[in-house]
Length: 239
Image 1 (cartoon, one colour):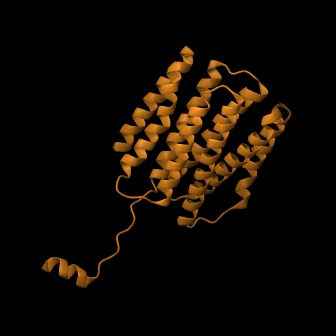
Image 2: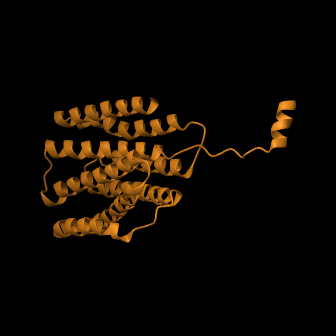
Image 3: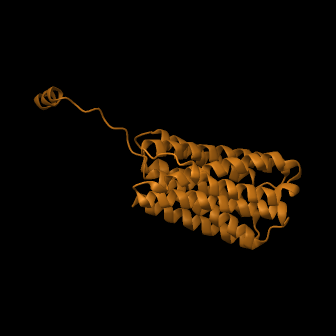
């Protein structure tokens, strides 16, 4: 139930941020947008209070880097935009590593063929944007490659036995790519951002982060305590 309550708080905060976008109140968004990832960090810590695993560290790292990116992208200058891309690039790397580790833990064989649809989408999007990227061409190309890698690693997890978790992770990764694709198109191709675009970007981004957090939480388990010998158990009973 704890996850449900945190998820509801997050959705409420996401709706509030959407209202501020509709109101064109960037002053209030300074508080509402950074709150989103802070709530997810709180959810992870609250649901895993007494133990640490590599997956938990990677998830928290991804959320923390995303929080930094959210704060930086609230500024409109090009320098802050590049710094925001760098922060989110680190978040995508953390997610990709988490997916790779999860695949290895579950014994899922890597299937190179699954890279084809993701690579095709990346090439098509970059081809469309390439002439419009200007001085930001290299950062955008690098970020696009890394988030595509993240999506490709999530696609490898669709064969998880936990179907709910597989759906959460792939759905979250797909929505993350959709959000950043719309952001890239509005900034570089259409060169204008409407209220509808902004709502679509934050909506898909917020739901993506929630799904990824819930999907990985399904696999963050406490470390197993060493099994005690029969003699040790007997001694405990005697004491």
